[in-house]
Structures are given as structure tokens and as C-alpha cells.
Image 1 (cartoon, one colour):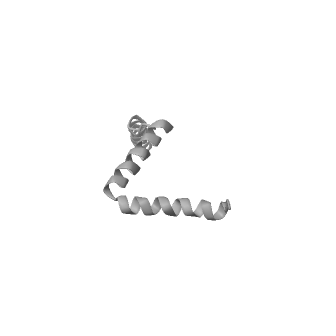
Image 2: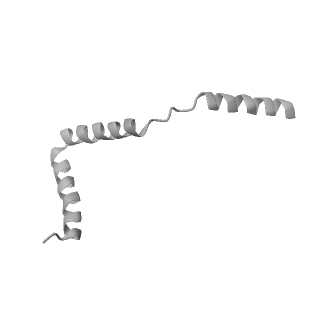
Image 3: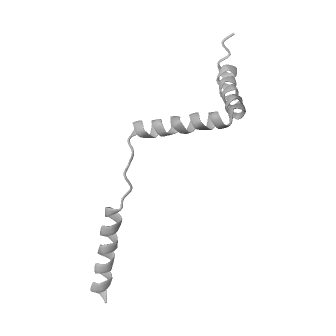
Length: 66
């Protein structure tokens, strides 16, 4: 029984390593996020504008350039 289990565990491990997900490069991730945000802004322009104003307001409020 012990050899059957270890053989089965080894085959499961080899299948898991063979089916590993490909890791994307940082450039691909950045491009994907940019495409997603652009598409979301096209579908929801009001919310995207509100989010940009909110994001711009907080650094402007904290930096107080005047």
C-alpha cells in the first residue's frame, strides 16, 4: 500500500508541475490593467470622471500648493 500511495502522489505532483500557469511579465500585466481601465471608463464615463476627481482631490488637499 505504501508504494502505491507514493507512486500516486508522485504522479499527482508531476501533473501539477506540468500544468503550471504561465507567469506574465510586468509589461503584460500593465498593458492588461490599462486596457481594462480604458474599457471600464468607456462603459462608465460618469463614474470614471468622479473617480479621477476624487483621486486628484486627495493629493491636492494633502499637498496644499497655495
